[in-house]
Image (cartoon, rainbow, N blue to C red):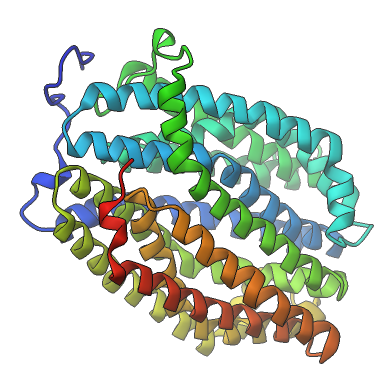
Amino acid sequence: MSELTDRSTPAEVQLLVDSPDVLRPLLRLAMPVLVEQLLNFLVVISDTALAGRFLAQEHVAAMTMIAYVMWLIPVLFATVGIGATALIARFYGARDFLMAQRVANQAMLLGMGFCVGIFTVLWLWTEELLVLLRLDLSTVPLVVRYLEFILPILPAVMLLQVGPACLRGAGDTLSGMVAMAVVNVVNIVASWGLVLGWFGPSWGWDGLALGTALGHLVGAAIILILLVRGRMGLYLRWNQMKPDAHLIRRLLHVGVPGGMDMLAIVLCHLWYLAIINSLGAVVTAAHGVAVRIESLSYLPGSAFQVAAGTLAGQYLGAGRPDRAQRSALVACAVGGGVMTAAGVIFFLFAEPLVRLLVSAEKVAEIQTAYPLLKIVAFGTAPLAVTMILSGALRGAGDTRWPFAIGMIGMIGVRIPLAHLAVFHYGWGVQGAWWAMVVDLWVRCALVSARFWQGGWKRIKI
């Protein structure tokens, strides 16, 4: 591969907008992401099973909190990743590959700045934040200890978020899948080996954390090598990492609303979790188990969300808003159908699914968790529509509406209803989960209205 010296198309790039239909490029983008998400799911399930079968109840509750933290940290880099994907997709659609490469380099520079800020906040105030979230005091030291392994590798986490986001804008979802496959294989093998003592004395809880850190380091090295050598016409070069105020402003103009949207959603989820944590460690553990299983239904939604966003950006860059809209609708049909089927499975096989992750003697966790899967079965269809259409809007650069809709759903619907259900009516964790389902239907209606209104097709970035 040779570096770009003009506006010609790189030899290794096959533009998605040149395809005669939308289904083929949609599947080409979505399938690697689906495999990547499936592998991520297997790691979450693996860690939960390790804690649930070989460690104590407080470790299971701590894994619930860790799952949210390991969701929060990558989302903090979403401000950079969303902006990079949208801009690079537009430039690729317009065949301006030199500008796309400059965006990729500025995104990496911005990502490193975010690393410094995230490290500082979490290093100084982790314990205070956990107490604020009403986490059972017996689990706080476990979460703090886990983060002592994760915080030093924040640059690796950033590379695994921002690097694949740049490549997705160029139409390459395969590289991210390969990197995450390696992350997950290393993570699973190292975690099980360290916890169960395959490599010497058992590391216990530390083994789970160290396995996660090792996986991220190896995966980040793969992304770094790909971008230094050049992939899809994108190269990392020191001489292009000198701060470019204009490009950074453009990245933040698109990325900040999208990143704030995702960050606010995570923070609201933590607020929601604080309500559930107030019900005790058993409920927190059961909630975490149900969330792990429920996350299986996110996989096709995440995959087609990425595909819809990339195609929306590239088609708009190529001056084809009609195909941008069609690609999003086809993504909803395919991804939404699969997610709805997952909801049916949750409803029919809730208890057997829970027993796969929790040992038989933990009767309280099993009995608390499996009704939650029956409840969330009613929310998988609206969740699919919300995820995929929001992805299309963000890919088009219309990041403010998903942010506003997310806030209406979480702060205006889910949190108040969960608070009433738990503290006023005494409906417990099941009441909180019904509040979540109502929120999903409200957001589905609002994001659908914005999509059909069509203003996202005229966004300038």
